[in-house]
Image (tube, rainbow, N blue to C red; front, top):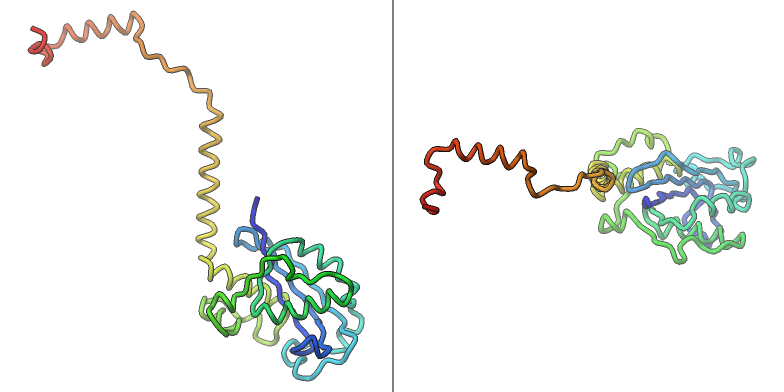
Length: 226
């Protein structure tokens, strides 16, 4: 079975869910065996509240744009279904988990962090470092993030960062191809109908062998037999 991991990012109206701030965008990117599958999950969310100017400057999402978008309650079931029981990957996990757990609890779901493996690229990096700086450190193009943040954009960058931090695509590819080759060899050996090995020569082979021996001049074994 292939290992599934989801890179997840959120955009919000502020920094603290306990002060009434809400999620306005969620982006998820699926990886299997450290390779993006191309499968994603994304939603804009109507927070049913104002969006402070500082938050708008970060993600570019306005109250007008989000006015006709679904509320978190509307998309919660789809979101939980997509997550399944897979491990989740974040950059600065406490921030995103705090918001997601608050939103899910508000609509009657359990928090996503309970009983689930959580990975954090900030923790893997050994301390506070921005996603931008990790991208630069690993040579990941930030052109898509030049004008604004976005949850799906950041989840895609997060997935790329994690891949590089854990060995890169090449390591994952080599592991997969080695496993595939090993499986192929095992299957081939098991499926071949090998003929039964015959140890004793038949009469024709024995006669040919005697003729060959008679043609040898001064064979070395004669010194031991004479």
